[in-house]
Image (cartoon, rainbow, N blue to C red; front, side):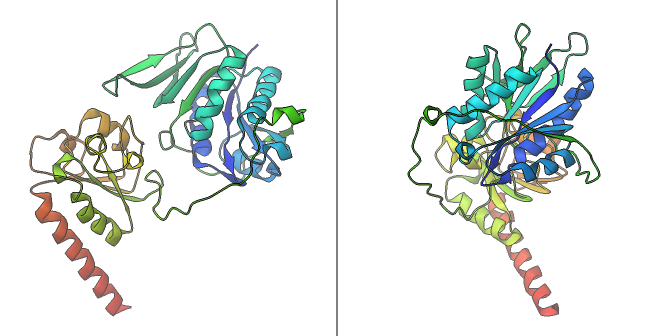
Length: 336
């Protein structure tokens, strides 16, 4: 009989990825609705020490599989390990991060286990009547939300984008069980040869990790508009982000996009310049702590979620903000 909510806790270079911690928060909510437990699955080489961190973030149990073949992510060894764990423990639900690893691993498992998979979920709930997992995701380019069920097969599986779920507060007193499992790997399980791992240094932070976001929409006028926003972001030690319209127009890279078809963010401060506030965009940023919107249109939907709304020309307002922040910094430097 299937039981428990499993979370594939992704790690890279011995460092747990944030999305796994976020998923443990949601897994606790789902497990409570089922009267079951939360189990984290940790794969890698010499990663057992990370298990305690997962317990502190909500895992009742952590299943650890260690092997030199799992040091770097390779599809076949990781798929084999998760398949063996799934076959032995028969989980009710398995959650993956919708990262490059999760998006590669989850469909492999779905095919091997003969179950369904709902990708890029933005909402997960337990149906109180049937106890099935309700998996909600954007459909038709984000124009509507679809709720998908996997009624006939187990485990129910979903991938969730980073930043969508809220992690639990760290509980250093939490206790849990750490289970070390052995998976027998064969040389033929390594289907690729890793000759070199080339890592590029990215100076800018991922927008899901930023505390301050300066976001621009079609109203900034063109790609040059982001130069002004970047100046403000630099003054605030934040990051520039955007809506879908500017990405589709080729003004800025896709990894800066906020919304249902982009990334979900929860910064302490979110500036929305020239963004009308389509529902697809709002779904990706409405949980921000403080939202400041600037738009010429006083009926723009963005004002409905903004904590502070300014009706005006962003081309006049942004330079003044930059100027004021520079003055404040200079004054603070004199005092110090």
